[in-house]
Amino acid sequence: MLKTRVITALVLVGVLLPSLFWLPQSAWALLTAAVIGVAAWEWGALLGWQQGARRLLGWVTALICVGLAQVAPAALGIGTFAPAAPWVVALYTLSVIFWIFLIPLWLNRQWRLSSLAGLLVGAVVLLPTWLALVQLRAVHSGVLLAVMALVWMADIAAYFAGRKFGRNKLAPSISPGKTQEGALGAFIGVMLYGLVIGHFLLAGKVPLTAWMLALVLATAVSIIGDLFESLLKRKAGIKDSSNILPGHGGVLDRIDSLTSTLPLAALAWLAFLHHA
Image (cartoon, rainbow, N blue to C red; front, top):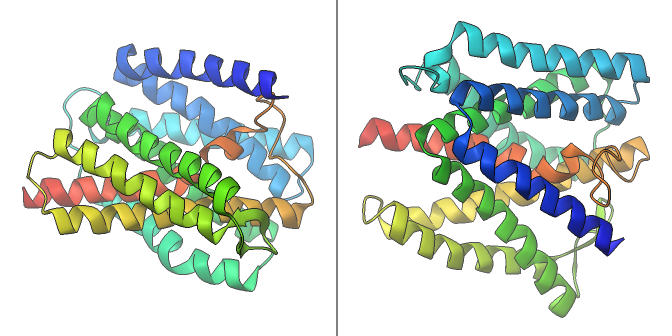
């Protein structure tokens, strides 16, 4: 199992890094649209849909992304980059409100998704994620990689802190393996990572206190994203969103924390751009 996980991870990194740094922006938009389409197909499994409906959802989602790239290329850095279109800001704002205010309540109440609500929630989860993947990469490949690495750092720090010190469950009815000590480890790991990244990327452009608060919020939101997918899988009675990634489950299992964190990072960047 560990060997399979390592091989799959190496393949993913081998595809991600060259694509992230060398693909034209239009090709990156298409590649990520395909990834989000697969995630939408998996989302259908969380709703209990049959295979045909799941495929349709995946294709429609991917085509919506491609359509956005065609009708609003400037917002995605394809050609002249004009990122702060009103619809872009609105979509990110909706996503951030969803993750910060609605999902903590959802986790507390442990609501079950109906098909119609599931479609709407899926759109709020997946479309801003795709938009952020494309926009942040248009800013600079290193910016997108830094945000993704923040989420990975939170996961890694939580895993090792939880294994070493974990005693108190974080959300036992949702994800029994997660602990409060692991969550604390995630915050500490991201703080240390953020201090290093902030030194190189921000160079004093953002006050340290504001930067630390942003890192705390990003870490909290990444944990919320992870817990939300865990809740949906538990309600659907499945362990993984799919088996498309051997040893890792599905695309949603790999990007659950990114779906909550990337739109927040993109909105924060737009706010920084506006006040710079």
